[in-house]
Image (cartoon, rainbow, N blue to C red; front, side, top):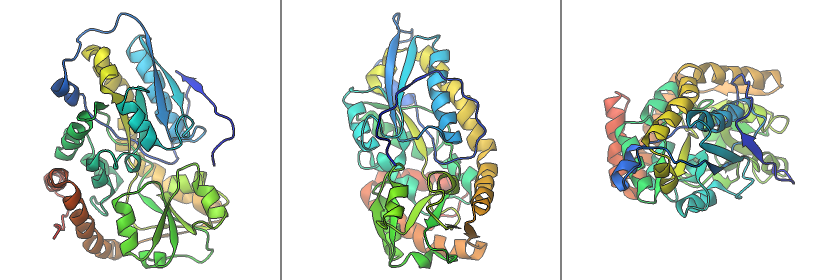
Length: 368
């Protein structure tokens, strides 16, 4: 729930965190800056402060890990030439879709948010919501990693708006499932039929849930718990870590449908601000931040997902997981349906996503 007073914290901070919580990050590329304008090769002589807006809430281990990596990483990498004033938990804008528009127009300098807040402006990001595009969490972040065909296309679309996608590997506390207020365990996606379900932004995931017979309600990370408490929704889409943290005491159970959906987070910088700091500082920022976030995606995400399931159980919740056969059947039904919608929205990004999946040898059920 949204706090009544705005809390502004300056980074760098002293961040000591173990990782086990909710949400996702991924990222993007400096290649677009070179294609859309000349990039300075030396750092700005004077120091600057970037305003960074995010929907990540502080006090959650993974969120603090990421925000700390960005704030401290940018300052350290640039020898203090670029510092960050960070506005978490939608404190600067009610949604990060609005923050992205402000970023486009140079009113702020950076945004960290998930793809669901971006896809209305940059259609390539709807591709991050395709059901069952990867076998598991670690495999999923190979799709949205810098250098893949999908990543390059998303990057190019962002550049058209004057936005730089910073090339940092994707990270997340894992695949999304559903937290339920019901104390009766759920064993299938079919249980969503007729239910009102919280999602964190409009997009293909809403189409997928509609196909399953659910009605979606858009609630931000700070609104989800209240929505469940006041019966606006009776189920909420989110990772196990998010459910164990933000929804603790509100839900009574969690269903993990496999790699149905992810909420990857990305870092964006206003193109003029990015270009003004020079190539050396750009490269240093990427290296510094990715040292934390990229490592998490590669080495920690699966363990933290399992830890979140254990935590949910310790809180008295039921936890059920789809079988391999159920996942395979859902993938055959939902993936081509979602790909077909994406193909109609953005054919170039659709082709780039399918090419990426094929390069990684992931199952592709082509859109009709």
